[in-house]
Each structure stands twice: as C-alpha cells, then as structure tokens.
Amino acid sequence: ANNIIIVPGYGLAVAQAQFAVADIAKKLKGMGKNVRFGIHPVAGRMPGQLNVLLAEAGVPYDMVFEMDEINDDFEDTDVTLVIGASDTVSSAAEDDPSCSIYGMPVLRVWKGKEVFVLKRSVGSTGYTGLENPILYKENTEVLLGDAHDSCEALRTHLADLE
Image 1 (cartoon, helix red, strand yellow):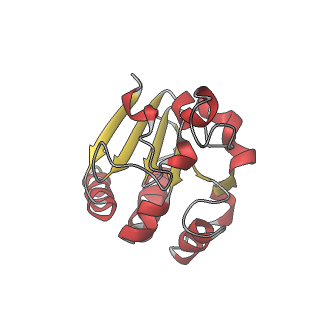
Image 2 (tube, rainbow, N blue to C red; image 1 turned 90 degrees about the vertical axis):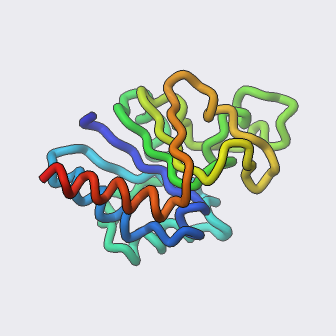
C-alpha cells in the first residue's frame, strides 16, 4: 500500500492512542508512503478535538486534512485505517433514508480499496446508537480491541520491519 489515510475518532481520544498513531504515520512516511489523516469536523466530543490531539502528538499540519479536503481521495486510497470512529464514517448517512443521521456529511472511508477498522467490539454503536454498516462491507476488516493496544501492536510491527 502506498496511499494511506488514517481516520481517527473519539475512540482514539479515549484510548489516548494519538502518540502511537503519530509514530505509525511517521514510520510509514519514512518508508515512502503517502500518509494523511482525514478529520471529520465533529469527530470527538467537540469540534477540533482530534486536530488538537494529533498536534499534541507531533503530527505535522500538512498531513492533516479536513473532510471536505480529503473525501474525494478515498477511491484512490490503498488502505484506510479507521481508529475509533463510527458515526462520522457511517455509510448509512448516505445510503439509508430511515437512518437518524441520513444526510449528515461523513468521511467516505468505505470507498477505499481496503479498510481496516479498529474498534472495541462488533455490535457496539456510535454516539447515535447505530451500528455502522461499513463493518460488513467486503473491503473492510475489523480489528477488535482497545485502540491504544492495537496501535501499539501496529507500531511495534512496523518497527520490526526496519
């Protein structure tokens, strides 16, 4: 995978995984990969929360893109890594008129070639109480566990590749 988008959500904030994910991005970039972060304007519990956490972890501002800047790029993305985001990446917002968030702008992560979703459990819901249909799409794999532990394991694996 050469083109990678990381989409953090509230779960990343709760798990305090921003430092591990910053290191993951740095290592991937050092391997010549195009790594960017896609941020939904209301990701987290307040607007800008994820931007602040990524800045705190030392992620360069030129790697962080708002939803409107990056949404059209998912179709050309080899790997999308969703960490602790649910409602802000739910395809139901575009596909299901009966859904309570139908019409809400979302990051279209499901359009990426391969999507990896890190979450605590399947069946758990986002803030709206809805299960995310992207979890069941053919191009999606789900890694269950605490976001911090999962990111630390990924960081360790990348370090072992060096």
